[in-house]
Length: 368
Image (cartoon, rainbow, N blue to C red; front, side):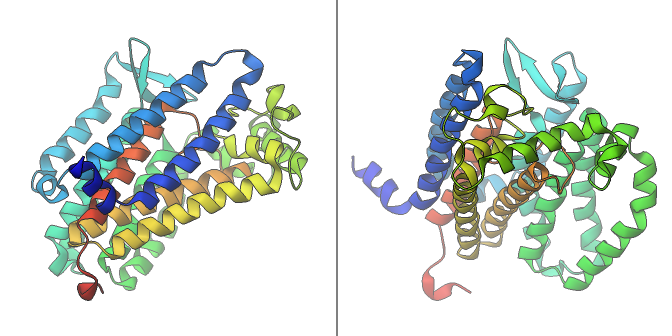
């Protein structure tokens, strides 16, 4: 009883409370988006994932992050191994990407789970090189660290959206570590210069997904998903059509309505008010994560929290912009809202790590 009281006093209950509030709204949305099928299977999976996620949050928040940092190379190898499992008979395709492992009806996305491992390994790598971070000899190994994971994801699953998430996480962590802006500027120039070469490497379908944002007539079939999302969002107006009353949602006109386009589902049935509530909850969660990063006791823990904040930040705005037709459809979920067991549990594990950072924050008089 005493240990439970001690835990509740020292853990970051704000993170847990915000996550549970997001999950409660998620259950409402998943129930609505699957109501027309007459099956509660997805609702039950989502509920089970949330409960398991909360347990994982508590367990992970107790783990000593600094002890994990000493073995970051082994965790990095583990992450590579998880991704390579997609090349075995366990790997299967779903949603256009060969990015899932399935065994006995249980599906796991290695790159989704791997994001949390990557955050920890990259944080440890950066912290070990912190004193010489702005030297090119330090940046090359760090760049290879990111490139290997990104290359593996492309090679094994061709999941461009997931690779963008990894790159965004790494950039946020490097910024938090104090990387000079001149290196970011140089990276931007290099990225722009490499566009013609990357463009030639993309498949026809991926190129079309990008181009339809600017000219829907290029492929009405591919643009159809985005079009239905925009129709659903517009139909909701201010307060929405009502719970279980959205025609786009209930008649399954809106594709991937419980996963990729769950934000559009919320927009049709709960309107602008519902969308603002989702955005507000996630923004509060992201701001809290950046605050946890600011108060971290060590460089490693600070970077872990920053990486988790970067993950939530990128996925939130990428998914919403995708629903609004401002970003290509790349299949990244809306954190804590989209249906998906591995995604939900991964997000709770990430938040548990951040809560662990908060429990071991440095004294206020030492904070920067």
